[in-house]
Length: 340
Ligand SMILES: [Zn+2]
Ligand SMILES: [Zn+2]
Image (spheres, helix red, strand yellow):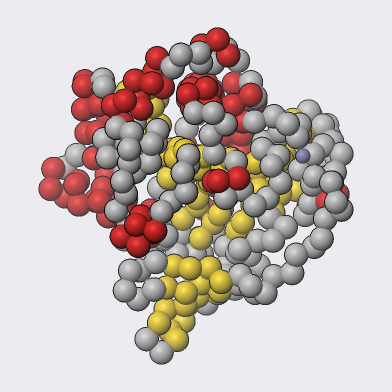
């Protein structure tokens, strides 16, 4: 059974997950490949050919529970004080979105329509998990490459975590957005978008509904952010046409990164609005002040002790230069970026 503990000074929650047994895998057998469906926990949802039975081949995108979950939905939620400390049981969800049945495909190599299915899977699972009032926030993230911390098989996948607490990284963004709104009565992300689209130096690419930019204060070289151009607090409300548009932009952005940086490892995070039903009356202006977005953080170097100890990042590549290189990269067009 896992447990959550909160650092009383920083407000950071930590998952302690030491007791969950790992089921050994056959050597060489990838549980995410088509034909190996029996090696994963039963599927939660799948997208692909119609008329296919569950846990059989024929899928294009498949969602399963993590074999070794950090959090489990079956755990009853119990928040408790341990003397001066706050703790909670490891209630929550930890799911894997297997993005393709093919072992060798990267997300960027899938067709735009296939990537849209992956995005639909994220949206459907967030919607479903937010129905559970115990879950305060749902996070989607993806680690590609060894440096980005991909401990699971190298087969393309993303992870969805439903948390019974609001993680510090999201809370800092939500608090910052709320403070900006209280002072200016405007969404900070809408302000950023307006500024960046007018200025243009940090814009990487735009599509009908979305914009990809290099953030003004990027922590890592070639950090990128995708935002919807219309103010929207929750990713999962995005319609199917806009998801297809987003799939095209995400594919193009990843191909730009992959051609500018050789074999980049990256982390991708989706920041969608938290579950307001789990905390009625708390995020009162969130619909106006928060704007969902995707952060892509290439990891060409290990995070150094300085960053870990201080939370203060040093970045040797300016976002203006990063955006210019990604916009005009020497050969990314030759690889067919943007084509589906
Ligand atoms: Zn595989
Ligand atoms: Zn906004």
